[in-house]
Image (cartoon, rainbow over all chains, first blue to last red; front, side):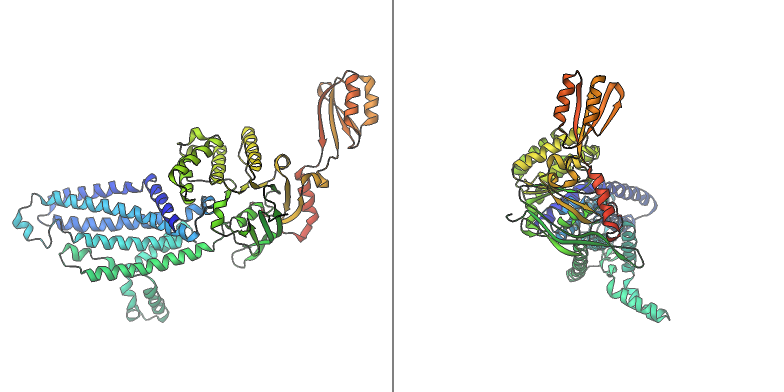
Length: 268
Length: 322
């Protein structure tokens, strides 16, 4: 498994060379542009809106990279046949999969970290001229450290989505992998609704499908504490831990599945 | 023979074809071969014969339907074994965002080489393959021939005991082919075992101590090329210039066929036991000059065609690309 680290470094390097981090420029432009615009339109609400926007953009950009880089992580190597000389080296197929995963996770960590710094920087500049009495009326301070909780869970969610993309990428084409991964992502946002699907539809078959999906598809709404954090509602450490553990179980299962499939795959 | 460097036993690979009702397509049919340590082994056959399939099975890029393969006495899938082997795939592709040096550094790390050792090996290997000057050039800027050299470099980076080369001459210009031949002979002299696939007989003739010929997924022949009757000399083709009229009767008496070609030259077809050197001497004494003398033998392609025809319907249909 030591060699998984070697593969991870290679994936990170490829992300840099493929200009994946260019999305950060778009993120910065979005945040700065929005803060200028909102500052002129609203009074006192601009910090809250920027927090909302910043957290949402961090999540969307991260998921976008997780899906569209994740789906080609393995399939690109197989399609281009670069996997042939690689797998003739002393690395197991499992090590290859885990390395690919860790590499993209590192890319996403750097990406999320830079976005976090950018968000705090914009919030700092927005809040510095606001009088203290106005700031006291806010639900949470501008540079609220609890934002990091929301960002941490966004990262955990991205890590889970990456594992889903990698799982499909281990045996499917990029197009199908993208469809499946985005399907899981969307279903995961509404997972809680699937539980009670039988109460709102009168189709037993559909209800069974929804029930199965409820148990199989990860509940991604668990990782969304953006609203709570922006409004200063505390998110407990126990909740953070349980949500992370929940994701970890899914990630482990998906990586195990991806490794098992990939280990048996013929490269024609 | 002591323990063979490579051994396959009844190695068979079926691929499912068809979407709704897949049926097996036999790409390789019960291949049993042994390659001794230190040999240069030519694995010959036309396109679609099963050469690449065999190499992929040996590299565990494919899993056999039945049968097994061993390299250096260990199962082909053994992870530790990969430190002792090198592999050049057919038409290799490497990460084009990397430079040749970065690519080899990546692979060197997978071999667990220490940084100083890695740097030294990378420099040495790239220089050996004649691309040391381009080590910091991104691979996307490499020509096909240069990529083939990079492929050879990565196959030799770990100084392997057994080297598998799938069509190593592919994409190389005449100079490149000559360099690769020299490299393979150098590796042979250093005691390395080389297993290479090719569809070009001259490569095999120049390099191989042993060959196996596959056609339609089956082993058609194996052994030393010189011992294979089909590749024995079937005659001589003597080309002489300035042959005087008076000598032509003597030439016609000795030859199976005489053909006058442009420039006053004659192509003289002689039987295998006709001692062409005597005729050459006589004609030279009469004022003619030697242009060339070549043995006549069947080409590998002729043998392929006949073997494939002889296999008839018992073997699978043409596959191509496998």
